[in-house]
Length: 343
Ligand SMILES: Cc1ncc(COP(=O)(O)O)c(C=O)c1O
Image (cartoon, rainbow, N blue to C red):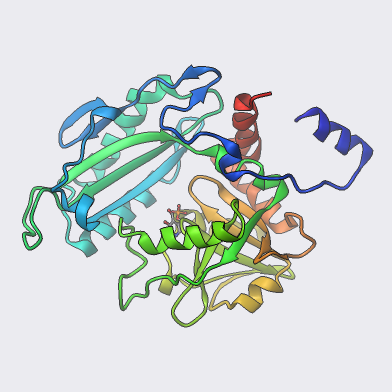
């Protein structure tokens, strides 16, 4: 905790919203500084071989590159231990099956490869850091009308990008409902975690046009709330939680964890259609996603949600999530960021 935060706590002053720069003003270069030293290079796996991550190349003629013909997934670690690995691997295989892509592995073999990826890189995990472990399969090197190529398959690890959200646990995140809509199951089923993500990128850009720190919320084609560009959306009204059903969203692994936790905590939760009205009039809004678990949202379209502070239900869910993960999620993100702040 900084001196300012201590003083505020002691004096009981109301907290001012911090001025936020995108990514806390940090350089997002791949080799960001870890306490003054460059992070040593991790190793990654491509088609049967382990190599330094910078040596993994994807050829121009790979359909994953030029046609977005690929699916992927990722899980994170908490203190180096993988979390809900099976759920992410099962979702990856469902995405691959839907897109008729063959990873060339069984789920058990892929699990072993991702664990090996953590093991090979673990000595490079930085202070307070944790891994995001990515795995991706493309249809491979092939022409426009050729679909029977040898797939390209990669597994690699990156640091959880705590600096993108560390302050928002305490201050609350802001969000914007964008004009870019989510796909529907009639077009490109959002249940598939694919790399054709332009609609998500455009929605991110739109949100940042309004506020450089804002996260997007997309509607479906009916005008109901769908999801964020990499997160699921929840609203709290009174004592109960609502989240969109899985018809027009990626069924987030974190979303499932929150549904389980709410059940264990005796908080009523329903999956149903939600409109912008429900967001603007909610007592609380929060996102769920693998990197941050639960992130309170305190403004949407520049309208204050509830009393403009992270609410009690999101806070309780974060505490329960921390217990499940075996680490204080908020504290870790803050320590990670503080250890790298310039002052
Ligand atoms: C479009 C979309 N929705 C929701 C999520 C959240 O899913 P999870 O909780 O499994 O990270 C993601 C994750 O990347 C996503 O890409």
